[in-house]
Length: 282
Image 1: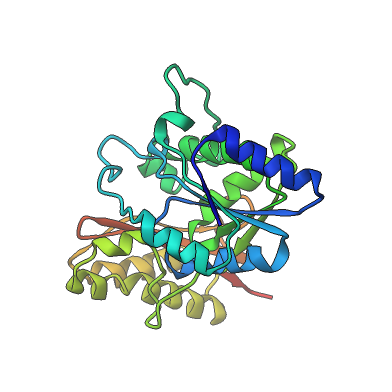
Image 2 (image 1 turned 90 degrees about the horizontal axis):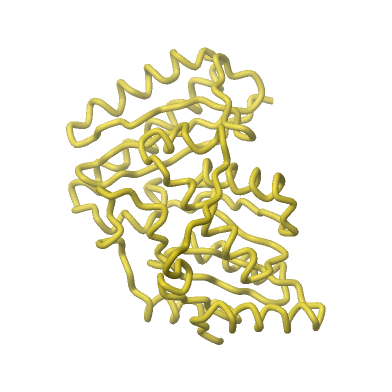
């Protein structure tokens, strides 16, 4: 397995694989790899000739009061896991390699970036879209793998790829959860034992939404009110949003008719967690 630090060498590596007619699968990450990331890597390994993983904590997607400096970083362990999963190359650039002095170009997917998480994290998805576009250009991926846990991110990236005619197929893989239902996240490392237990309220609330919809409760306001009641019983929880939206375009749904994405963002102590489920009524 190769560890590549420069854009020039990464691009040359991918170009060489393309000349040899190899299909490239790509998993972009910010490191602190967990079983959720590994599930993406394994899927990429199954479906492609070459698997490339990027590890880059992207400063452009963090706000001034967010956790960029303390975001979990464990590069040696990440490399160990990538090698264990038979990854071909890890792209591990420094910030100045990605954003050199004078850098001034950004991508923003209008209409999708300022809702849901975007309301509470201004500029976040502009940073996400920009880094993903840059990585796609550098890595020359045929297939790119993302997790359903970041549902809004996946919708935004799909839209960017479509609008900018990027020759890459976006594949969104299921959420990986702990045995008690907590969605895997690098930020779970911030939770103390009491907060870790309190965080289960997210999955409890989502399961409640699923049951309501299966029991023919279709009114989104009723569903959201019910979920708020469950979460507010937990003193350490502070809700950013609970939303019932179309899973394809994130448009809010007054009533659940066919398929719905139930998404929420909740602070447990000082840690902001997101989770979601897709409910199919058919």
